[in-house]
Image (cartoon, rainbow, N blue to C red; front, side):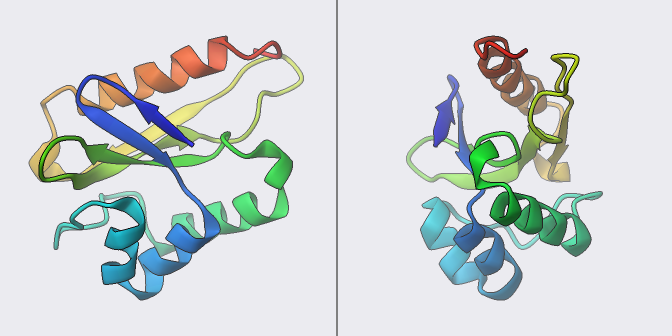
Length: 129
């Protein structure tokens, strides 16, 4: 699943991507069809967060789309700029929580606002939110 915004491509994290991110950045870049900056990952998104996401994605495939997305700058030279995602599927009260992390060189350009806006729009289109 990919969510598109005017400047970004939000690519749903898959087990293959999450594994390659930890083991093989060349493969990771191929799967995302994007350049992986040397500064990857953004602060607060560490290997523990990656492994937590991998476990969530694998253990709850019925909730696909309610976890993490990679934020890719769209255009002629796509580049990974950060992560954004839900912290799980909608709760019993119909709420979802979102979080994000953007590489320092891509901050203060509105990418986090644009990416979280796409997640909010997607969430409000769901009948349980």
